[in-house]
Length: 74
Image (cartoon, rainbow, N blue to C red; front, side):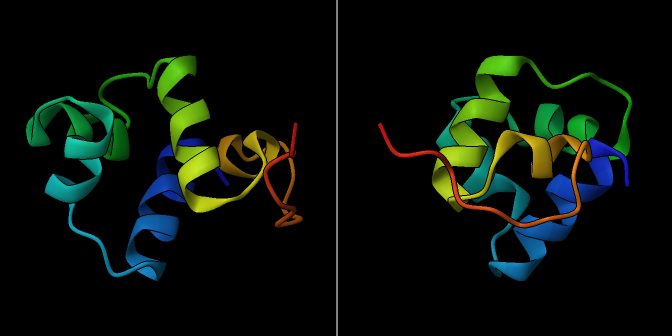
């Protein structure tokens, strides 16, 4: 699964709007919509924020793994 499909799936699983996630990332809703559609690549910093927020690994968000493991604790 591609990361843009994965971030949409995770957002919908948490019953969040694109606007809510965009607010979390301090970006506009249209920019976030472009992340989900694949028109714009999501910066690594934002992937990290989403991984921590959703408590899933970055590997899961990026599609490198289909195993939904937790975000690493420090």
